[in-house]
Amino acid sequence: MAQTISIQAALDLIKDGDHIVAGMAAAEGKALFGALHTIAPRVKHVTIDNCLPLSPYPFMLDEAYKNTFTIHSWFFSGDLRKAYHHGNIHFIPNHLHFAGVKRLDFLKPDLYIGNATPPDEHGYVSLSLGNVYEKRMIQQAKTVILEINPKLPRTFGDMEVHVSDIDYMVEVDYDVPVLPDTEPNEKDLAIGQHIASYIHDGDTLQLGIGAIPNAVAYALKDKKDLGVHTEMLTTGFMKLYQQGVITNKKKTLHPGKMVAAFALGTRELYDFLNDNPGILLLDGNYVNDPSVIAKNDHQVSINTTLQVDLAGQCASESIGSVQYSGTGGQTDTATGAQKAKGGRSFIALYSTAMVKNEKGERTETSKIVPQLLQGAFVSLSRNDVDHIVTEYGVAELRGTSVDERARRLIQVAHPKFRDELTEQAKKLGFF
Ligand code: COA
Image (cartoon, rainbow, N blue to C red; front, side, top):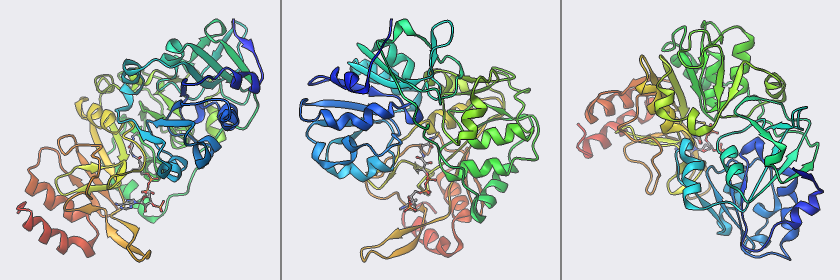
């Protein structure tokens, strides 16, 4: 049965050479990771697997700890990007639905550190905001330490863990990390309108991470009976539900329920999730499996990218060879949606980005390019791309040849780059 211990006693359990797996994003053990650096004088070669860490932990950010802690990450956050040059942070390539499964084929964790709600009267805690890989890690880790936080929402699906399966509990009451809701700008609204014209009443949606997918939700307020089967449950989905747009009634898999693998958003979202039997948070290996996604008729996937080339390859997680975020479920959800009866997938991006040149000045550059930056990692292959959307419209690429898709992509590029892109496409032999 789980023993309740202090933060210090929990840190004392970590030994030389231990491999720790952290819960993802808001499912992270914020108190323990916030104090992890304090054991640096006593331990050597501790490794941590994490995924979208949301807090500025000294063990990650302070170069003084780079020889003690090595970090492997499935999805970089701003803090990991900042500290990457220290040399102790390494990316783990993966499709989200395989994240936990394949890592466990490679190694077994010594410790799992995450968070959960206080136990209910039957002795079950809820893993609350994340089950991308968390529960299967709990089942495999030698030692399980959960921070028990009454501010976490109790969620349903496959989130329950009995106290007999937990080794140690640490009582905390910090505020749960949030992702603020941003107002869409003019470009977001234009992209949202373009995508909305392709969404039909009764469709089931997946919205990805980033500013644009959240803005798309704003454009859907006049739709009816939408459903949700998504990797990440967002504030945008909550608002659509509250507006009566999402009913989940027409879903062919888990009708009547919103399905997701993790949730990240505002405090209002967490309150909405609390004790809400209409929401199923299930294992990411199930939720994001393309063959499971495909069981939802009329499934629509909407994600974003950083750069797309004229053949339709999407570099969504790196700028050149510099890792920016992660593949997450981009391929899972795009291919799953396209396998579904009546399914569609969209990759939305602004036509341009402001990028620093050699002089350090910001200049406007096209995000639709003849060739990806050298070393860029492709998150969605040209074979799997379907629609590409910018503020200038929608390029329907499904089934097209390279010359046709290059033409269609140039039509949605920023007008000031279209001639140059056409010239480059000719040089590459596309036309
Ligand atoms: N060249 C250089 N810099 C670029 C660029 C390009 N082609 N495109 C964007 N950038 C810069 C932006 O200017 C911005 O810089 P800033 O922070 O200094 O303003 C930064 O990169 C981020 O771009 P932005 O478009 O604001 O990103 P976002 O926060 O909306 O996130 C992704 C977009 C692509 C990073 C994010 O959606 C992602 O990681 N996707 C892959 C995973 C995924 O889709 N999973 C699916 C299910 S959750």
